[in-house]
Length: 146
Figure 1 (cartoon, one colour):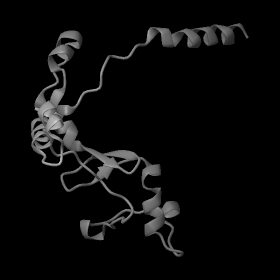
Figure 2: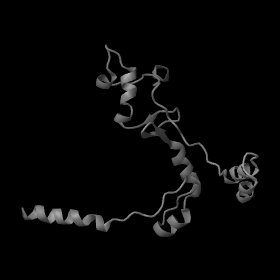
Figure 3: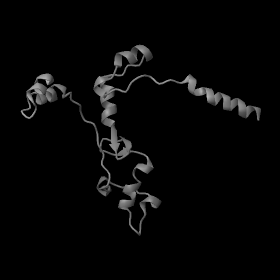
Figure 4: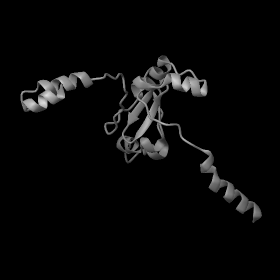
């Protein structure tokens, strides 16, 4: 019982020993120099591009590419709706699983979308100019947007 209370006390104090680093950054604005200085880790633009292009956004989930042909890996709960969609009364993919022997045998899930962030672009100047030049805005608002 004494061990229990000791472990409980340690567990209660554990969050005090952990802290998060500040910030959440976009791929095009990552603080590489600060990370290098603080942690001695060199996070290069090439590495960030690799991570960005390897990451997939699914509906309420994420995945990662594991092959150049587009095969990706995700958690089981992320594809349950697809398994249900592609199943039949005779063959429950949720119970039996599925493995395509060839790329031609792969099945497409119509209820799932996979998004990959291919690039980013700073459009601030373009939007600011469009707002400033908009004929539907009153002249005072156009002047303040410049």
